[in-house]
Image 1 (tube, helix red, strand yellow):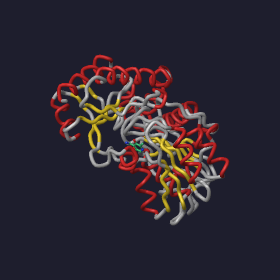
Image 2: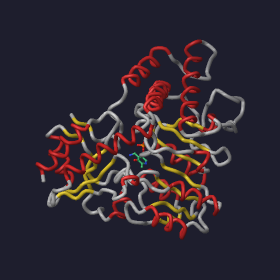
Image 3: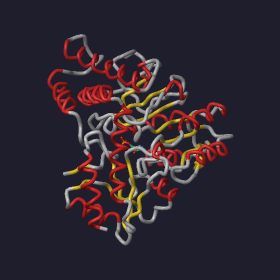
Length: 371
Ligand code: PMP
């Protein structure tokens, strides 16, 4: 199988991740619940992972790196911390349902900053117009449908000027496109551990500024157990219950692997594959590629449509040829609405550090054969 669905989850992982997960199951118990060896080993692993993530995302205090079960979990904490029913919230027109649905569920007054694909200047302008009076803003750093890299740094400075806390959805960017959490000054950044950070499913990370973060779940933390309240300090305030220790051990191995290769090198590799893929398809009149004119505004994800062919059918035919891609709305109807692809959806090809040039070209040939 040629796996080109890493935007769903990075199924292709370093061997060290699998090893770390199984070693953790063999040697680690629950952190913070005892001073014996297996508990201490688990506590050390959690701390090492927090330190590695704090280093990767420039978070001054590793206690502000919170483990979650997914990006969705982290986004729900962030949104519930900042938004009350009826509050005005500005979001980009490329948000995932992990942002849109929690805001709807809360009854927020959602204002969508819409701007065409790969036009960062227009997106900054759309945020500038909508931010006055907003209680919070949410922006994805990279669209999971189109690979579009949104101008979060510029949106971050607009938010700072207006005193509006910003939540960054780094689900599609973590591990490739850099994020300097302290410099950006956002309130939260949420990400999965199981995509670009190369950890196992069931892992996620929430970077948070202290004041804003409110618990979503309540329970035991192994600290201040005599109190009825959640501990004030992070990460305990947001991490009740037993940790996913094998997951975090795998995540740590994934992050170490990334740090050895470097995120810019991985982004360059994925962009190169995307470039080869698109070049091979460039002459085909009946294939529509959602490709940025300026390659700096696109990460290693591209959406495609084949004239006269339903996108689910195209993906099914590609699967028959051993090529794994995703079709449809990719849980991001807003992004499709903004790009004008809501009624049809798209077929999404997403590249990973483990894909090769040959795989990218084979996938392009298969698509050409269908078209
Ligand atoms: N936001 C974006 C942009 C995503 O691509 C995804 C995952 N597809 C999520 C949020 C949710 O991530 P998770 O499945 O880890 O909750």
